[in-house]
Image (cartoon, rainbow, N blue to C red; front, side, top):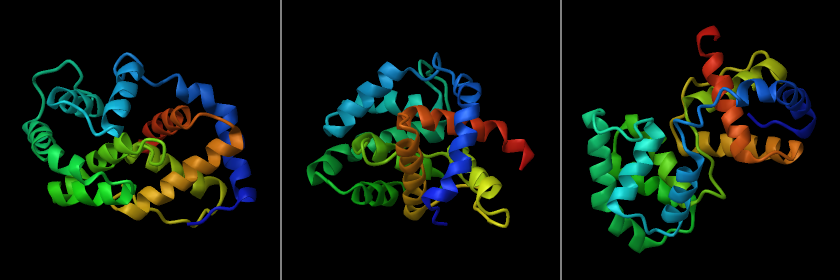
Length: 198
């Protein structure tokens, strides 16, 4: 769904009035921003070590500092490590090429969020992080303030969903003159909070 500047106004008002309430719910002790910046730097230069790949993925999954976590996640880490050299040699400049590459490597529906996360780290100035929570927040705010009949997907699953979310977060960020990463944290925590009510 395309939203124009006028339609954004009530969404922006809501975010502005409630920003600190939800932003302050974010667990900065669990998700270190300093480490996150290091992952962006290394991945965007196509130069993460195997250790860095593991640490970056564990950070996204909330496993930082843990050795005991699901085998399925360990398998993904190994897949990224074993395919990174080939991926880096392609030197993709288009985020969609990066997205499609890792989508084809993983080749299963359950890895969408990880595919987008890697795409984000490589192209962090162009592609935001997306997950079920901030995606839910976007859709809920759209339904609440723009179109009460708006029917939306519960979870993102393809490139177009990422494009839709990217436009939303870019437009809101520019209108509010707020950092996109701070806005993402608001959306994430708002999306978590409303999960049981929609």
